Image 1 (cartoon, rainbow over the protein chains, first blue to last red):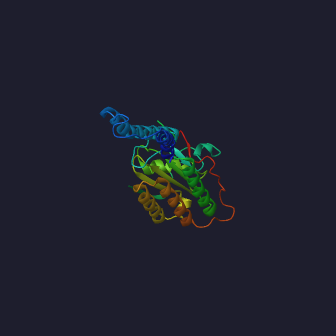
Image 2: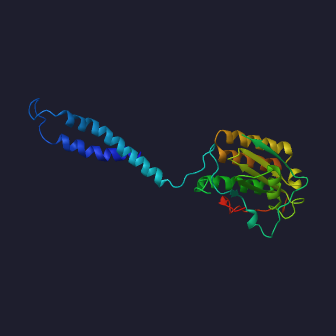
Image 3: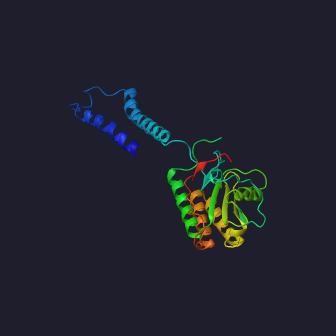
Length: 108
Length: 143
């Protein structure tokens, strides 16, 4: 969205200026464009557009902050607790085995 | 080790809400720990579970231990919680979670699993737990 907006802001004034530059002329007046100028205009516009899009994409991804965990990739974060962490529960509690504990496991 | 937070604040909020609802509904203390585990998973889960409540033999508590890097989940219940959440119910919740995890939905799997375990535990007895408020949810811990 941001990219489209940026491109619009960039191209609209350029096209408007080109359209209002004056008479289009004939085949011989003004002089025809050289091959370099033609490539510059038609190729350069496309390449420039891509460059602007890439810059916008890089800028917005940098703005989005640190990388989040993506499933399937190695876990490279500190451990995360949802709920009250044992350290925050009142009283010192030693880790120990719990006879009679139940549960189940799963893999994916 | 950490390279930023593992979850967005919205994701943590979803998990917190699911946990809080399950605790209020069942009166069982729930804890979810995500991170790598060394050694015997079952024993590690029991050891962490024992720190969630004062008397693991008497107080109901459930720990969901997830190691995304090692691709396993362990649901551990104290003996008191086991009377309300059978091993088969835990297994069903673990299966639900792994199904979501395998599709890449870590948060969705956890919220569904927590909800499922909370419902399996049934309604809270009057005066039980907790109104435990998971205010610290989502914070990294040096455990």
